[in-house]
Length: 343
Figure (cartoon, rainbow, N blue to C red):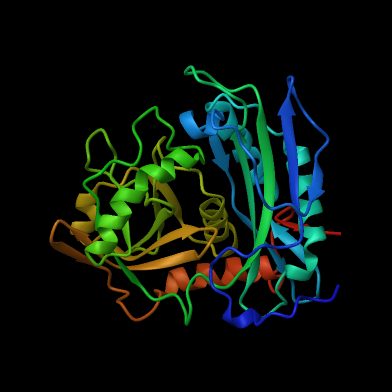
């Protein structure tokens, strides 16, 4: 497959229209067979449920060209399972997990010319999304939905390397106990936009949200999970029913324990432990950047500085980053089932 004539090395993390996308519609109690289409537009009634009651969920994953020239995706089965869970929570008809994976295969294959070449630092971002298209004026679930997957080539999230960032502890709450924080719903991200704009205006890269009940324990940011390295070299990550189960974080925890032999702990983390200097490295993890290193956390004027500094990612997180991205690119053997080849 001949690649598109693009300057792959200069791509940003932005949307670009590609050749094909996958679309399936739910009507009369069933999903249709689905199809690939070149039409990148969506037509909705002004009474579509998504516009009024925010029935919308999404996923994010990537396709890569490996060192030996194969086109692969990273753990799409977990994205499929998480989207089923998200849909159920918002009373939407789940798109079957096996069909999800098949749709990913079809749309990536149809856009294989857009998958950046190995070594370019770029990848093909894959965005599945489901939303209510049915007309509904009363507060209730819609009866019609659309499932769609589009793709777009993106460059590395960080140009010139992952430099440590400065974040703040937010005065806003991201998700309530027993709420929707543990699913990938668009409404969760909408809730984080106002705090994010404030943080940017104040010179911070992101917010860290605390638990809504006590406001004393770490949860996550508006779009990423948190990982920390303590003085004994243990990887520690917050545990809460309000945290989105990140596929990247789950992969990092496995790599840390099973590949690198590290001790891994998921537990509640009081913000007081950061002030006490119990952690030497910190990072945010997610699909886009894999790991974004933390340099400073500002807690209402008091700075929590990690010993790894502001120049580069700390050595433990760098090893985790190199190992996981090596697996994604095919340079390092991944655990069975993690790499899904597009044929």
